Image (cartoon, rainbow, N blue to C red; front, top):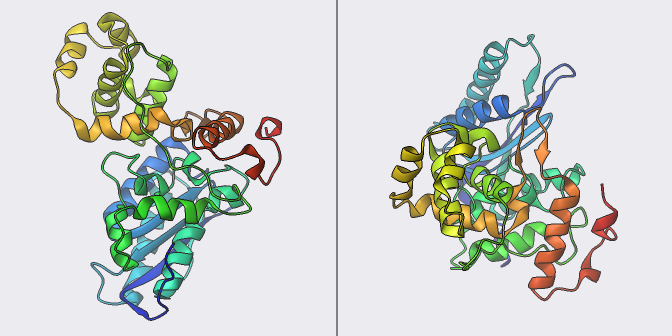
Length: 321
């Protein structure tokens, strides 16, 4: 990454944190996480980085829509209050901490990186991409309708680089809690005559691209559409089988097959090409595939990219559980 200027940024930014109490359910529960993600996105559209780990939410945002920094805390406190009422939790189940100013471009770059490394620092993943509740996936183009775009973050950091997302991913993932030298940048799945990925992989890729759960294909909406288009593109062309998986009619699958939705198919192809992006939300607030699968995906991606497995800092990923 280029050296950032330490001058005060013209786009003032704040670091916001929400911490869960001892009896609060995980912020990564699919129902809770999805509600919080939508609500926070509506309240803080000019965000630069977001990550949920099980009992913490970290968010770096600008002051778009606020007169000054002092107006931010009441809004985040109101959202926490809505959260406790929505899910019938006791008062104090979650606490909004005082916002922390991010005054310089160096500070902004530092905190965006720190937020995206939260799951790695917590021992939940070996790559920031292998965590679904993080906007690091948005930056590499792996999410439909991203909350944070690479263009917005590059503009905020005053970096003019067409390959900004590639360099920034290397900058973020090169950490002792992840992999020394950084993890590979994801590559989209290429077309082939015969399918080389299982239905399960296609389902998880569609769910990852739409930031949903795997059972999302059973309801009408972008997850089902992304799944059908990706499955057909990848060579799974049995419409009756697709209808059975989606629990819908063959006519519905045929109608979806005629759609031209590159904004869905593009991120889904990227997720299909990299198993780290297929780690999605599942019922019970868990993640799937497991950490071992994601770590093996990182190693295979490194080999494809010509990076020696010896670059791993934490031993053989096969030994991780």
